[in-house]
Length: 203
Image (tube, rainbow, N blue to C red):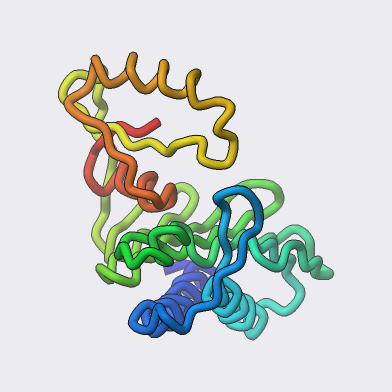
């Protein structure tokens, strides 16, 4: 495993421990609103702090871009870590066990390493540029589907911009007619990981 991917995995697993501990005590989690139907919890922040601390121990000069704490510029801006500490916050708040930690490393403007970790199922998706993707150490790949017929799509709703609902529903309807079924699970990171992990079509 690439050494930087190894650090990303360690950071994701450390954050996963923070998230699971809190998921077992949801009544103690502090919830704030960032905007219309957009929430952040004390767990998002604690998980991001854990990820940053793990990365900084090995790469103190790298730049870090976190969803909760924003940009922390390092002296070596060729390396940029991009963090979503809890993708699926609404699921988490509601006690729905479907969310993930998402970490990527961009090197000189290109995504080089990536990790998505589902702490509930213990599923670890990893990828390195030019070396494909893995699920818990096993190679995964997308099948070459040429038609939507028989496929399952994943999507999200425009919950932050509900003025686009009519346009969205028109697209949803058009695609639904051509597929086996559609899903809206609440974690975009896991939706994308499942493209390779389950050989499904997503949009």
